[in-house]
Image (cartoon, rainbow, N blue to C red; front, side):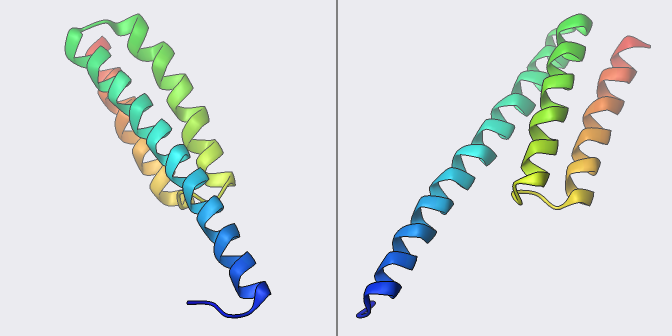
Length: 88
């Protein structure tokens, strides 16, 4: 356990940041699930609409340090490919 005042404060800050990061990651997962549900149900328009929302959320996660850039682009690419295949 931390004994110094500054160490106790840093523990509080770390916990606060971890909670925010966890919420952001959870939000991205929820959006991804929405896209997958739209693909499964065959709703092309809904899937495209939600895909654009997912892209912005994932990109926001990159700027906030939740995801690495390549991980984000890989996820977006895979989702976009599935939506595009659905339209064909």
